[in-house]
Structures are given as C-alpha cells and as structure tokens.
Length: 178
Image 1 (cartoon, helix red, strand yellow):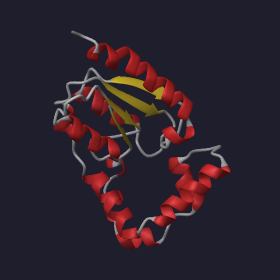
Image 2 (image 1 turned 180 degrees about the horizontal axis):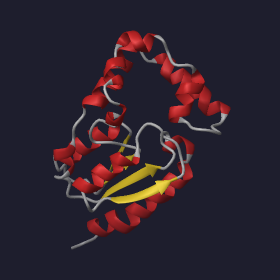
Image 3 (image 1 turned 90 degrees about the horizontal axis):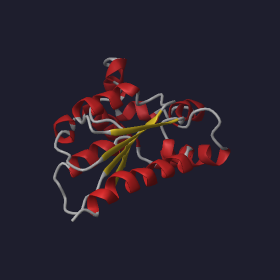
C-alpha cells in the first residue's frame, strides 16, 4: 500500500506505475497529477520564487488555505512551526514542482485499486483534480470527506475509516485470490 498526500500523490502515482511487487493499492489524499492551480493562470508560477517565500504569508492566510475554519490551536501552531522550519528555497522549489508536475500517463498504468480521499472544503486542490484522475483512471474509488486541504490532520478518524474500508473491500480481496 502507498499513500500520497497533496504533492505526494504525484510521487505515489509515479511509483505505483513501476508495478512494484506486493503493491496492493494506492491511496491519494487531496492530491493531483498535474498542475493543481492552473485555473489561477500564470500567477502561481510567477510567485513560485524564493524571494516571494521570504515574505511568509501570515498564519491566518496559510491556515485559510490548508487547515480551514475551526482548526485547533495546537494544529495551527504545528503548521506555523513546520512552515517556519523549511528554507525558502525549498518552499519555492516545492511550489514549482507542484505547478510543473505531470503524472497523467503514469496514472493510466496503475493496475491496483486506487482510492482518492477528496477534501470537500479544499481551497488549494479543487474537484477538477479528482475529475482529471477519474477521467484517466475510471476505476478510481472516490470518497469525499468534509475537510480542508490537510484532510488527514483535520479528519483523521474519517480518513482512517475510509482507508480501512478500502483495504477490506478492494485490496485484501485481491491478495486473497488463489
């Protein structure tokens, strides 16, 4: 099993497309396989520079896009600490990598069950990303969870229930066949 969250979805898809032995399934969470912000035009690419990331967005703005309304103070603090700990060059490279990513061919090569956990309140990765995945991999099982982009952090129980159901229903079945 491999789980890719956000940009990690692209990496998970590329890995799964190599058909590693014993891979039983793929889980993508609030993820994408090509530029997730293309609808915003050229602005994200222009801003994906180290200089822009030196001007760290205020906590509330970052929280708006990732944690959504109602996040605990502990989670907000953890997010702020994490973002602050990452070098601006790394943040810029990560943003450019997300904008430039393309795993559309690879997703069509996945032969194991694929689950997509859709964060229905995601302000970064829209439903168009899920639609693209389903168009290219029609067997994708999609489950929508009322959560912002950081779905696993905000709704861990709902995500765990969806994952266990996916494993029991689609992945263990495959592995128990003679």
